[in-house]
Length: 138
Image (tube, rainbow, N blue to C red):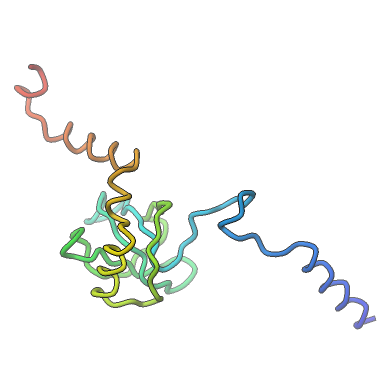
């Protein structure tokens, strides 16, 4: 009995290979992975960009700005407080700040982000919020 159940399991896995993010039929493409660019949605750094550097457990990740680029220090935060973007830099898990900075420059991740509609919408919202009454009713 055990032999037949093992062969059935292996045949099932051969029929349904794991779905990859690059597949056109993949349901999800924004996975939590090192190098994934994200927007912080809650807390003192809300509205700032960060990069996932390491995965602590199912609910928490270590993020880093780098601080001199985005103003976000390296710290741990829940995934619930992040909005993941489609952009991802190629970095190893737990990368140093210097490695992260060079990967972001090499892949031009922040330049690609500034060209997206999401980034333009956030920028327009910031500009609108900073207007005074004189500028608003010209």
